[in-house]
Image (cartoon, rainbow, N blue to C red; front, side, top):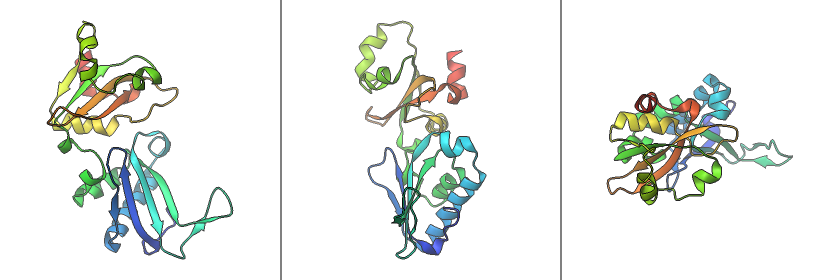
Amino acid sequence: VLSTPAEAVQRVSIQGYHQDSPLTILEPDKIAGILEAIKEDIRDGDLESLYRQETWGGITILLEEGAEIQSPYGPELENELHISWSKGFDQVDQWLEDEGLQSEARITAEQVAYMVVEPFEGDYQDFYGTPGNFEEQETDSNSDPEIVRYETENPEEIEAALRVSDSHWRSGATHSYKVGFYDEGDNQIILESFREDQVPEFVQDFYR
């Protein structure tokens, strides 16, 4: 990616995990802008932001005909570059916001009416093997006085939570809270989790 000039790129597609379709960038000036933002984030990134950080989704860079690169997996030539869209890519996120494209690429606080946080103890099967909806678990939760939920409509807190919530279960990591994001009709948009080392401060303060 770092060695790819903007002139060699046909389009850039940014696909958020929870978006129905990717955001496709075709205009040469916008391709140059997003590509430079990606490069800046890669150059500035550390091991955490490049490989271990939670991700919004993926980014695909389609090269122009004749600009193929050597595949890292064999002798074939490839015309696409694929990278994870790390939540630590601040320049990419800022570029999308400046261009008014952020909400087309990923879930933002503007699309969320409220969120619900609940303590969680268990493993992958406990989290994904049960209904992924707080309402469906309401009876069981209400019968347990130990379960206390944190609910908020604060857009700043919702955005902060979106930036650190994890959409994947990480082996060896402790996921200490589940977080559901809801729309105006009380429909759950996504259900994610907070790793123990990524719990927002306002959530920690509530459960102290």
